[in-house]
Length: 236
Image (cartoon, rainbow, N blue to C red; front, side, top):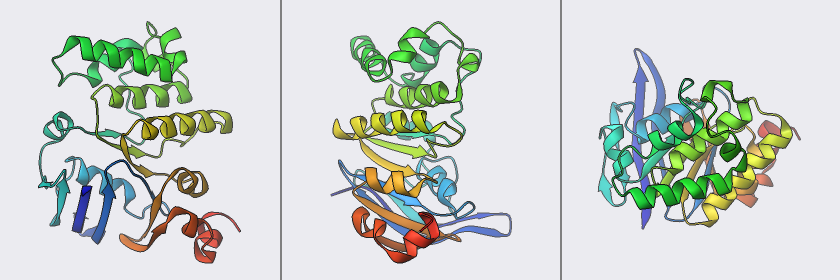
């Protein structure tokens, strides 16, 4: 069964049709990449899935139930979490306070503490800086913190929006290694990423989005070898 299914999704800003009726699905336990140029509608799609934006048409199903228009905090309670573009860390809170904010919907203190230790194991640098404020971290450390904060909500489905944006190559490599570990632990991942090669290498399947439409979908290895994709997104 699909953990996430999107049918005929349309989203408009004023008179601009940003997303023009797309279908996509993500199976439980799968990592799926959504790639495409800037302005294609990828971030808008993620915002509609997680309840930040209301679509003008179409439906979103999560775990077999329609959740179109459900408020974001309700979806977080149901195990759907977003790591936003630009990270969005709380600059005046400490690293540990940021992580605790990720668990704000949870009541079981022992499980929250266990997941905090899990995040620190994934990101040892966050443990080292747990008493620093989020605004004093480097870009890469803030990305670690944003992912860690989302994991503290105990998600079944993790939406990642441009996790490599603005990061040095070595930090990008570390972030993607962690994303692979999270997926290997059973968290389902929908990944929006400008670095198409990295995204497809990490994923089982992929969708190509252009001008608000899904123009291509296939297994990730097939997309990596697709001449159209190679020319447009892999610089070959």
